[in-house]
Length: 388
Image (tube, rainbow, N blue to C red; front, side, top):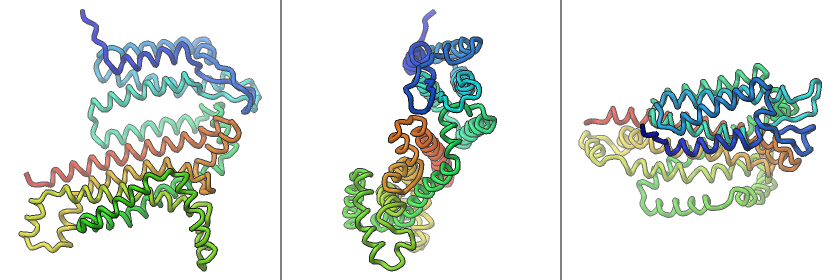
């Protein structure tokens, strides 16, 4: 009998073996600033649970390594990820001395590598299963609900990232609100300006080349440099234009961050609008003209609906991009989750860095899944409505 190996499974099994048996599972520190002590799975968990987690990882790695049914691979990835989510909290409680509020327990490289390996397996399985868009969104909701349940029940309370959150709960939600407002506000402004500009570029070829070249140049400017370049002109506006400062326009703060994100957002929106409109079948336009439709009627009744999935793809790119770039806004006083990232870097507190980085990654990941599903459903609907 020939043993058939899965190519991706070989990588997953190798990562899992190293993470489970060679890399540290958690890091224990007496307080938040002293160097940590690495603890393996067997050293971080109670004696009955450590070997059980190793057994689960080994079995799941073998399932990933061999060419096994997709349902079995799906079950293996979900079981390992669920076990890791539950047992990292158990490790926090097990290693924290009774009544000690200074000790810090952090997930170490072994934990993160295991999460990466089996998330990779889960992603591969879901791709092969070709799930419907609504099913992918439902899986995202279930995963979010499971994480929410762990947070509400206090299973992770002894982990250092939750202790950092407990010390900054009010500011966390305030900065989170600023982060989301920056990302969504700049996206909304880019859509309001970029879609009409894209339509105009589609109609006027000379304008298209000039506009896209300018937006391409803006896109090549590093984000920190662009934030810095906007400080002087916005500071001048705040000083010389009556009422500008009252509206929040200043050299530092939210205003330059918002303008920079808006400028970065224009290229994907404008370019995708142009590409989407250019991809409208000529036959559809000819049929609309034959029916006596005006240019305005053709634009809103035929061209824009057919181009919408492509335009929405540009919006998806912008939203994910802006969620990440909004982190840099903290460098110029714009707020957001970047506040915790840069505070953590300055204090050499990795858990504080994670307090800002983890929700940023989670927001970007969720936005990508939801908008991918909307794009796919929209494109499918358009194909069904198109004449054969």
